[in-house]
Length: 146
Image 1 (spheres, rainbow, N blue to C red):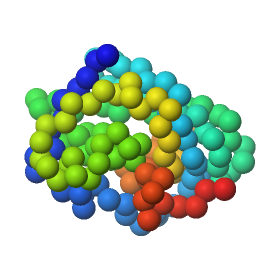
Image 2 (image 1 turned 180 degrees about the vertical axis):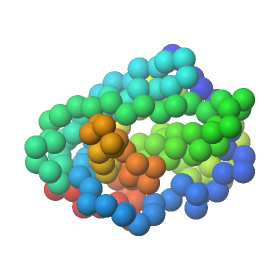
Image 3 (image 1 turned 90 degrees about the vertical axis):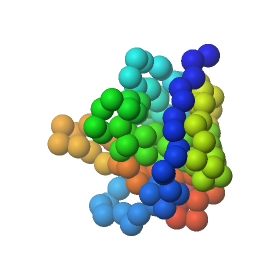
């Protein structure tokens, strides 16, 4: 099992918490079907369990998380996105973030975990999950999904 170390020093919980939605999204309960580790990214294959748009229920799609690299300028933003996904799927806790410790992440353990996600289409009509478009099932800001 491959693991990845991610630093949490200097990251606050408020930077990872939900923000108001700005579009008419499709919100869905998803389950991680598969995790494919690549050199600089993780591919999450997500299965839509139920959705506010019924035609999405039962479909699967991939979401890619680029892994932070301290040698790249965008590393901080990538780190926050990965941490937000890990929080939403229950792989880490807010206390893990508050500790400021380095976290050893085993992405394979995401298989079978569930979260609520918001889909939006990009300019190429590809489905994506925006930064603030993912919630833990117990998150009080979590939108209702049938």
